[in-house]
Image (cartoon, rainbow, N blue to C red):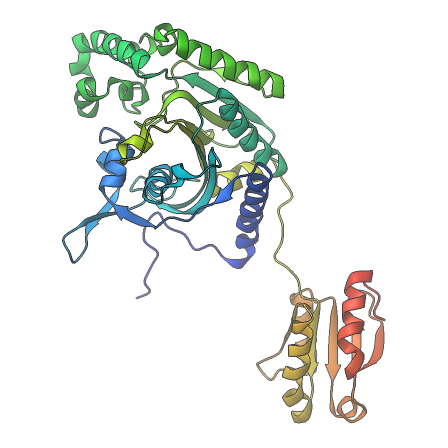
Length: 429
């Protein structure tokens, strides 16, 4: 009996890995253009990092975390998202003490959530995210959104809709919270058990409930925009003004709350409008979290960030029919005939590889015809053929696999000849 993959996980095979590498490379290069630097945090953290940072009323903490006890009876959790870990690291490593602020970071790596697997949503998924900590400027919010749009466009994802909202500061949220409680309380028994718990703990989470999303009271719930104080409203207006200046199109959705407790002021989602993308259109989400660093014992520090799963970006690229990369082909394949040539082939192969030439050889003692077929399957630009006669003359027959042209090249000139042919095109010198 074969052992199968755990549900909600996947093997990413070589022909698909190149797509992942492309997304990661474009995202990293774009982040560095915006002066973001990479940070790497542990795959598992103390559970408190997420119960405190993400919020104990969220679906992530209540239902989706992979939590276990280690041998020291400590509760650890596989990270379900990246922001809380980055904030914890920011405090632990005193990055707030740097003279260079804001601290602009990006990360990528596997995350884990126990939820129902579906297209683009796995229990183990790879997330790419950015966090900018140390500034409360709405212009920084706009920069983060510009960075996200820039990554998408470079990947060919252009059918997009950006939705933004303001969750206000603590004063605005307190007023809104009271209004929500008064709105939902008379009929809270009609809602799911989770929402009944959320009513007093965090009524904002009710607006994000998937079970009760069609309930009439959700449609008529008071909008946070009605409760923004002067400072919060001014912040939101400055954000929109900067987005307009940058030519970034957006829609304001007062029902957008996001699924994590640490957000305030700006919240946003980026959605795909590509035909055939699927019912779940969200590609990326994020927002501002001005109290998260304090929750980990750090100083008062504003922050903003976003995260997307690479799996969903791949789906979006396919929906937009972006030309996806293929795995790298070989520059040269060595075909060795006879014992002496077979024994010498590793040296030639090693010399080619030292020069940066993508090369390989047969390891199954195949006949010449089968070796040439293998070279063709690997997409090799040329084959390097050596046999008894070639060993005696200290030269190889180099065959261009596109034109069929053959040249005799000495062993001493072989590397330079193939390298020159790679740089100059298909012609074998």
